[in-house]
Every structure is written in structure tokens, then in C-alpha cells.
Length: 125
Image 1: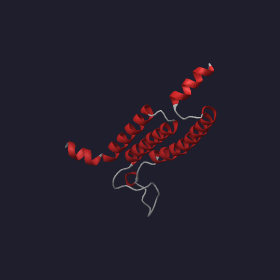
Image 2: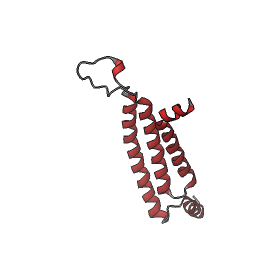
Image 3: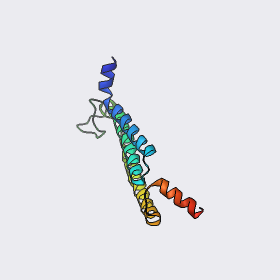
Image 4: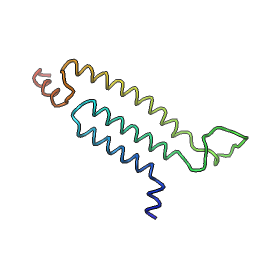
């Protein structure tokens, strides 16, 4: 029973593993670019998880073809819409984080958070 559940739910398990990798990267790394990459890995894991939860084997996208109008023939379109919306938001947030990282690098000449905090303490901010 456990083996069959593992094989059936492998997509969710991969998503959880990816989220853990991204979260660990976000916590461990000192470099701002690597932290942004970790956050993007976490975003991707959430999108994969939502896509896996929204998919039902044997069903198709909710586009009426050949007059089939039964609800049981189609997947739920809400998780797909959430994933698309999340991707747009994620790209915007990544662009903002990268632009702020460029500004931090121009001011402090480093991407290491420890070095930036040391320089901030020296400035008295």
C-alpha cells in the first residue's frame, strides 16, 4: 500500500523535495543571487504541487469539444489559473529583487549579506 501511494504521488513528493532544496538554499546562502535562485526554486515547487493537485487522470482541459458537457470529463481549471497568475507575480518579484540586488552591489561592492551588514554598521544606519 505504501509503495503504491509513493508511486502514485511522485509529483507531489518531487514538489516537496524541491521546496526543501529551495528553502535550505534560502537559509544557508549568504550571496543575494543564490538566495533569489532559492526563492525561485521554491516558487517552482509550489507551481508543480498545484498542477499535480489539479490534474485528474483520464480527464482533459475544460474546453468543450464534441458536445461533452459533463463535469466529470474535465479537470478543475482553478489550479491552472493560480499557477499562471503565480508565474506572472514570481517573474515580477524576481525582477524587483534583481534590481535591488544591483543597487546594493553598486553601493557596497559585494553581494554577501554579512559584508553588507558590517558596512551598514560602520555607516551607523
